[in-house]
Image (tube, rainbow, N blue to C red; front, side, top):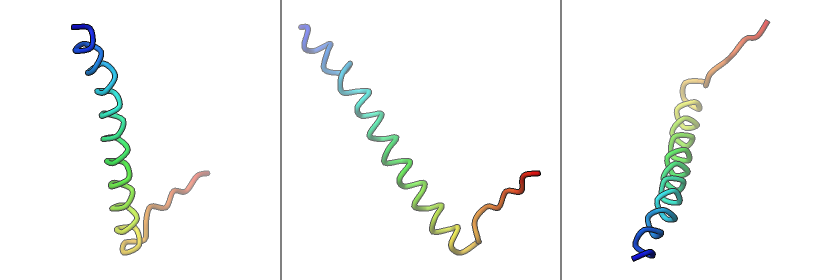
Length: 46
């Protein structure tokens, strides 16, 4: 019974972390491809 409760407690955060990593990698890949075409984002600081 205890293992049934520990299983999601350990694996759910790992799953969220993996999903966040894959989502971040995919978003950065898409941004880099679009930035090559459009020219990216330029920030001016005074």
